[in-house]
Length: 131
Ligand code: ATP
Ligand code: MG
Image (cartoon, rainbow, N blue to C red; front, side):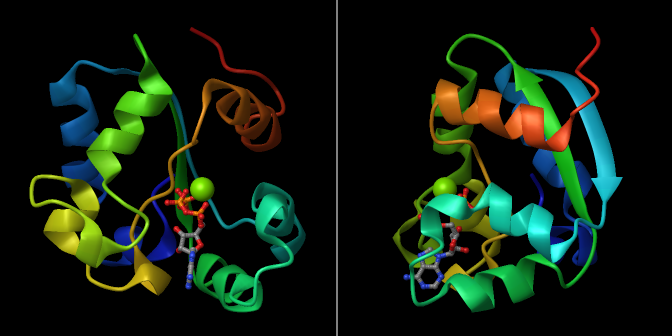
C-alpha cells in the first residue's frame, strides 16, 4: 500500500515501476480514503504501541493506493524493495532508503508474510481479486 505521503508526493508511478521492474505482477489496485476503523483493523497488531494514535492519524491524512502483487516470494520480495521500517536504516536502492527519512512518514506498507498478505487482501479487497 502506498501511504498518504507517497500519494501526496507523486511517487505512485515510481513505486509501481520498481515492483514491475523486479518482475512482480500487479493483480489489483485501487485508490481509497480508508476510515479510522479500517486502519485500526489493518494495524491491529500494533494497537498497544505508544505510536499507534499518531500512526492512525498519519494513515488517515489522505488517500492511499492499495495493491495486490503476485509472484514468487512476493511478500518477502516486496519487503526487500521497501527497505527497513526506519528509513534511516534503509539501504540506498530501497524505496524508503531512496525517498524518505522519518519513520512516521515512510511512504509505503508491505505485508510481512504470506499469511498477513492474505489477511490484508481480505480486508482491502473484500469482493475478491480477479485475474
Ligand atoms: P508497515 O507495516 O507500514 O509496512 P513495517 O512493517 O516496516 O511497516 P511495523 O512495525 O509494522 O513496520 O509498523 C507499522 C508502521 O508504524 C511503520 O511503517 C511506521 O510508519 C510506524 N512505526 C513503527 N514503529 C514506530 C516507532 N517506533 N515510532 C513511530 N512510528 C513507528
Ligand atoms: Mg508491518
